[in-house]
Image 1 (cartoon, rainbow, N blue to C red):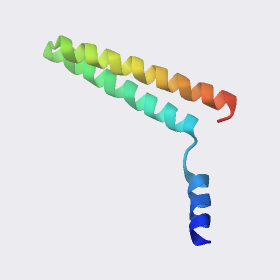
Image 2 (tube, one colour; image 1 turned 90 degrees about the vertical axis):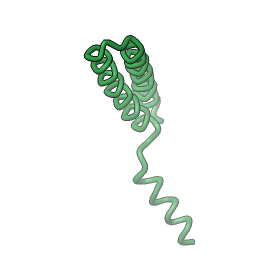
Image 3 (cartoon, one colour; image 1 turned 30 degrees about the horizontal axis):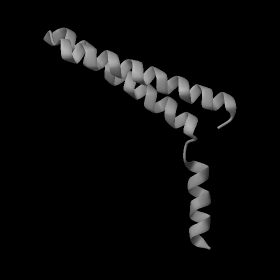
Image 4 (cartoon, rainbow, N blue to C red; image 1 turned 135 degrees about the vertical axis):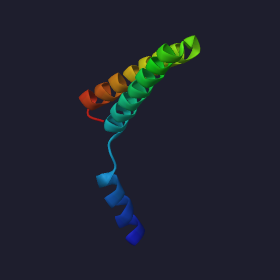
Length: 73
């Protein structure tokens, strides 16, 4: 009985998939911006490209979260 109540409580306080996707996407975008800036300062093409890729991946994940929210998930 207590286990079922615990699962219900976790379900109430856990963020929805849409929120989790949006937060993760924003974090990836921020990480990508830092990597790109670091690559720019260090003159590292690899870091600049990796940062741009992380930014794009984060943007896609953020948009997926927004779409999930619009659909009510």
